[in-house]
Length: 275
Length: 275
Image (tube, rainbow over all chains, first blue to last red; front, side):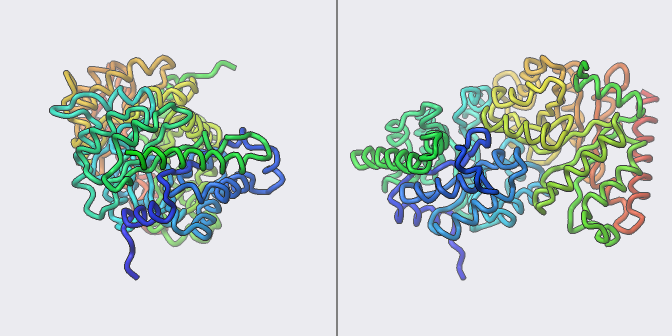
């Protein structure tokens, strides 16, 4: 069997789902609705219902591992990813873990993400340098989603420092071209800095961008799309977590999440159709 | 009960143990000696024996979480840390996890390290900015060990870029002064770059430095001590992982680890006595 590159997986997902939306599965145990606690696996129960109601409106899912590991719920993360792979095989799963370490240890993190959890991609932190990303990049059919310009306010502290001819974030973008031999790089650029999305798009050509920060963090959708879309009107994974999974805190949470995903995906599609 | 700051914990550990050695517990499942597989918890069994033989020669322990999470062995990491806390209460446990994310998620990672695992400190990545470290720093009696100049060869790719008047690593060091309101910051500076240890020491005053990269990675001990020691001949946590835990791959692994820790700690003490 010839394995598809992660870029090919994304292209298939964009086409089959007609969506650029990535649904972030960050289920804060303290905020889950009472109804899911009837299950022995309340986090998985919550996720399963969210997934079933949002899958038709999104192209991928992104569970954030800290929400599971803080509560000793690694098993429910495994269940969640297995559920997506079984039921929605065209939706890639990006494990949001922001890993990074020297080579021998990075291999262990890659094993965690790809072998243990079966994720299709993992987020990584570039601070330690490209050699620390290599063990992830060597999984040629898996995606490596590198932090570039993050959505938080404090991201300017280091990422916008002028390092020679470029900012640090732009230097990461520039170096990522060399890391992309297996067509498996994605860069993270926050919706809160749409002008950066345009600048980074100009550096990296058609490398996909994962864009967090719409909704709860206040990023503007139109500016994101104007700056980040490729010619074929794809190239972006626009993430929403809290805006979707907590659309209602009540027993109708799954329907509300589905509706929120529907609305956001439709809004993205209306804007990109008009561009 | 008044909680001790992490700096006070370290000072007590340095004094009580007369050692600057940090033993890294990075037990690669594929390299463990046959004898530990008689136990149902082979990683913990390996660690327990290493800990018992090395504790008298080191001031702290640093388990690396990827070696546990890659093999679904979180329970054995919990056992390991609990074992140290019960039996060697003066040895702080630094959970090496290199976490970093936006605020809400960083709180979950802090909960993982400090509440779930009961670690005394955790390593973090500064790329996303100081606001992402705040949820860790807010645990005022816990240590926050920030990557500054890492020991790997590729660390130069970003960390030595000239950002205005300083390199990126020096900028991180400079900013860490502002993050240190609870006396709980430690910076990571690789033994492979001893001149950086001196430069960073000059920036951060008496903030402790965690120094990986002696042994397997080739860092030079004398240069590390000359550049990093404080006036009172403390201020450093000199980490060795593979050089100690794999000193023998056979059933005598624990004795060999004890001997390796003894030799390295004695070497450190001989050099610092002569300085």
